[in-house]
Amino acid sequence: DRSKHTNWDYIGMQPQGTQLPLRIFIDEAIHTSNNSAHYHLHNEVMGNTYDVLSRTRKELGGIRNFSLNPHEATANDVGHFMNQLYNHEFLSDENSEYLIDLMKNAAPILKQGIPEGIPTSAKVEVANKAGFLFGGEYGNTYADAAIVYGENTDYVLVILNDQAPPYPNGKYMLQDIS
Image 1 (cartoon, rainbow, N blue to C red):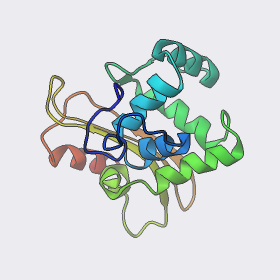
Image 2 (spheres, helix red, strand yellow):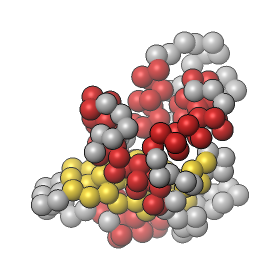
Image 3 (cartoon, rainbow, N blue to C red):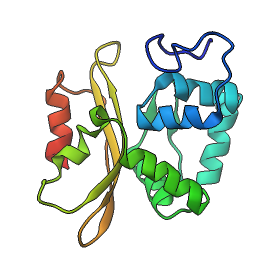
Image 4 (spheres, rainbow, N blue to C red):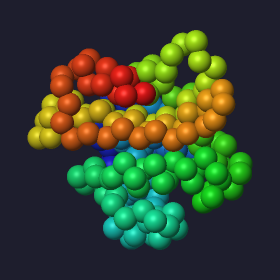
């Protein structure tokens, strides 16, 4: 219960002590960007966050800057992760495809950044993970990382910022860059 971020999301609405399959937490963390799922995965399932982050950085190789609180990462590190995911370099083929499929089919609100910036005439697929924080101590933050499956080539695009204009103008910045 200490890992619940809110009481209105799917995981947050579960009664205290409810046992859910691990796959539910993964699905919710990626498909709907559910922070309660994210916190449960790191705090309850994986154990000590510092140990998990250290192990994750070591296993992914080349990732130097990544933390959970505050949420900090560099575009280079996120891009490195997305490239390794695309190339199936740190998960099995099956699990890589599962994670990519979750990102391709994320909730529509999470498709408002990079995917909406790609011309509708283009025959592409986008697997992305967006993150939005509105207001609060750090202001508005819009971030998106994507694997873009293009007509002629595939590429990874990562857009991070630490200050953005109020909604909806921040999402338009992501679309313009895309």
